[in-house]
Image (cartoon, rainbow, N blue to C red; front, side, top):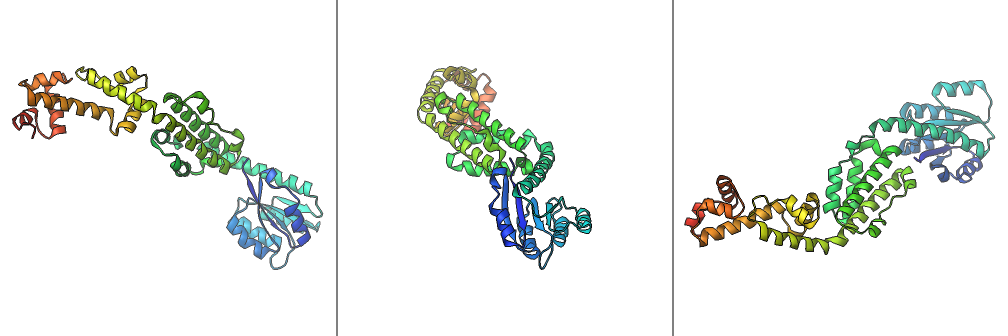
Length: 351
């Protein structure tokens, strides 16, 4: 659950310590962020920490609870206030209502009753946050293409920085538990699909897990996402240096045998090695340092240059011999890659 920040203002030391120490705030999803003995000291800390709920005594030296409440509501209107008073006076209660205080509680109050009142306010704050952020649960806030690019090419040591950048771009969306769940599971299933595609064993994929309970808290969700991306990169690495190299060798052999086929394409080669076209494109680039299309073009151009140098074949015949069906297109590609036309290359004998 989202943590709600609590700040306590109480001039009586025994009461302040009792509230601070004798309530297990963390187990309730509450973060006790500080306390102060009077309004003046409290106001400076409250402006800095911006608590969600302030519990304050009404009578204190230097600045009382009513004046402190006025300042809070003027500058931090979203902060809820619980006033503790030893005086059952209508004027105090009426002024608290006018200021916008949420609760006016009479001392003495048990820690159980105080915690119950705090939890009611905390639940309302969480509901309000959810209402404010749920319209922002937009799948397009997370760039799936960037996630997939990182899964393909990213390094495990860069996972933390990648997640931080990804989260920053979602704005306030990650404050919503619903949005956090959506983002985390979307990335999880993207990683599983990718690892399955590249042939990571099921047993190793099972180490890629998400504990749904951690998604209740913002910080735990971020840590979960970082761990998820790091592990996915590590699992990808297990297959890259073995199976991928073998696959690329098969691709190179296949090109050597079929480069004359004008229909030769990435899809055709991918079918031959039992990979998807996208996956093969990624693997080939990772292992060979260039795209498949560029490799095939360079391979055909080198074959064409050899024929132009060593035979008397016409340029149009060379075109067909190296897998192109349009002589004009072949000539255009040759000039673009070699800096001269096939005829100029032949006349220059390779210059």
